[in-house]
Length: 349
Image (tube, rainbow, N blue to C red; front, side, top):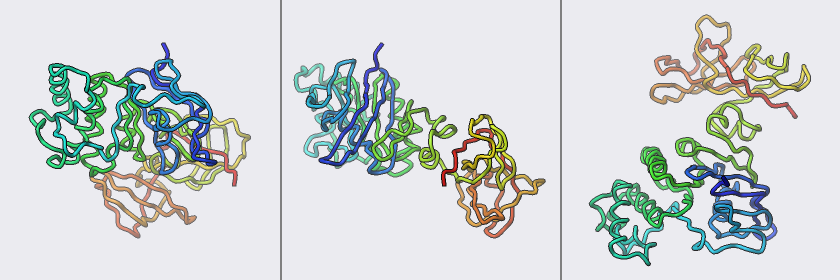
């Protein structure tokens, strides 16, 4: 069975500048996939190309195995059976919630419109608000209206462009989980663009990390964190630092934290210099350890405390301790390395 959405070696340009190059990915029916990366990485350009707003200079885009974009041909957005949810909601201020939601159902009968409206209001939790206007709603409620409007025509695919970035952190986290539940409930396929990895992790079945117009890795959230494909992904996803080390065995690296043995083997020559990724959860408190670090910074995160610890060499590592380990800046703490997932890259410097 062919994927619902497929991008094959897609390239997009703005004039002479290449914004996206060699991007290939797919989404099966019912998948929620995310494009994640910093500003200017090309993720929104990919979304615009999927929508039909930006032409391709190379490659092709297929929906249900039907080519909708290739060099020299771009099927119009309204002929792609897509729903779109924008960062700024893009609601019509002069229309109430009911008319905003049913705006794309111009050819439907009054009965069908009413049925779809009630289904959508129930789905997004806005029952009883159909006669309110956008200015009478909170940001989260406006985004729910935008979502209901996108879903009302029963599109094959929904595209979401930074849909939660105008919301506060608490609302963003709650709504992202609600949106995933809504999509999974009705089995809709979706592509989300975001710069927020927590948002991508909460929503995405598959996540593509983009950098300088290229797709660095297409994987699950777990694998992006524990098995990054390159130093950019390792640095961009989660928190952590790189420490220099020397490969003692194919699964062991000697560092200033001691010899770290992991769950994977590298085929580089023994003795190679490497950069070892050390995550905050790799460093745990250990009163009986000889390894010490000086607290140079701390950040309270509720159940946990994030410490920046200076090693004797002057290098620093991050450590996430239970918050009852309340150490003060300047205090020396004992620790050990518990890195079950060893992630290293050849040191090319």
